[in-house]
Image (cartoon, rainbow over all chains, first blue to last red):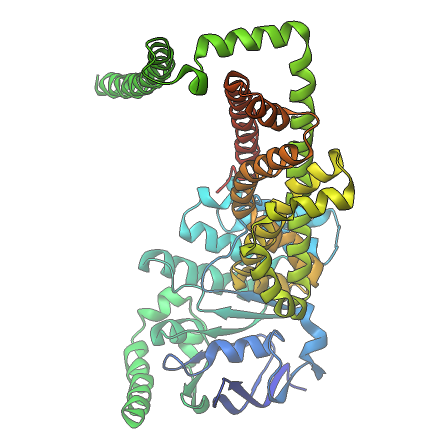
Length: 258
Length: 267
């Protein structure tokens, strides 16, 4: 049985006198522990697809199965990281990290220790009693990762979590996220517009075309890159040639659309 | 050596700030003194009609008399109580209504035109009806204070609720939050700044409602003193009541600012 299967997802948006098809017949499977990236031109419905997988939007047609069960009922099993950290400014870092358990009314006292440990692993243990506006963008996104990890989700959905950061912070965080996910053996889906990031982080890349969003092609990242940290992968000799391959496909897509 | 220099610069910077603050305070005091002394002077020289504009010395004399015979306290107490009650009830009920509108979006859509009309209507015009319905007493005056602030509070706070960034809601929903949790954890605390600004507006509005209410009921309170002073052509009484209102309105505003500092210290 596949871990996550996305089956014939279609999504339509209605406006006053017309409708647009955002997604058409999207099908793919993700196996346990896999890291999948969704890339494509802006407006191809990447974020919509992620929201559907998360069960936040009900698709017009199709369904998402997590371990054979419908996603809508499995909501608590996913973790979602957004483009910006969206930490709650009126809560301390600790309260922010423990937001998930707080919402789920899980008052297990060991969670606090776990949260402290997570923050410690990410190198921001000393900030636990501060408020988010005292932290830099990179630190805040780390807190956001800790907040996502604390509920121990089976599936992680990352919606361009590095796009608002400066380059150096982004590279550091990619490594951190990749190693955290590997340690906890998480299955993840990353949405990004950055081909390099997709190659550096994932095992499989799905390229979507726009109007309507459809799967254009699927790439398997070379095995040697899969096993490296994102930073190492970016500097490996096979990286540029694989990058070119994906780039070309994306170019094709855009020239066809244009 | 260089650390010493840095320290020194810091001290100089602090002194500069202090100096600036002192200068502002001096000017504020100066304007205060100028205003009251020229008022007094113009009144004595009859450049302004002392019968209408009175003078600070007459006002303070009247105030002393009223303090001595104790009658002023009753009036202050009555008005203050009515205003604070009108303010609290109007604001809290407005926020509650906004919460209801947020909870039931369809209700919000349905009542939208009615809210617009109610908001545009001059609420003090309802005064006579309220007084007949609730009787000439505290209740109708408090009701005036409530009526005047409740609609605008509902509208402003409701729009603040709706403008909360969708992504905070998204974060909560990924954790499986229900509608009440979304309200409690994101919508409500995120709207504190807008709520505080409606508090500030409502301080002024509830004074308007209460004073107009007292004009109409004419039994007790600072509003009653104003209307009474007007009827017997005692403008010293009118102006001293007005000054008292200004002082207490300013104090109430200060209290709201204290609350603001407490509620939104981390943003």
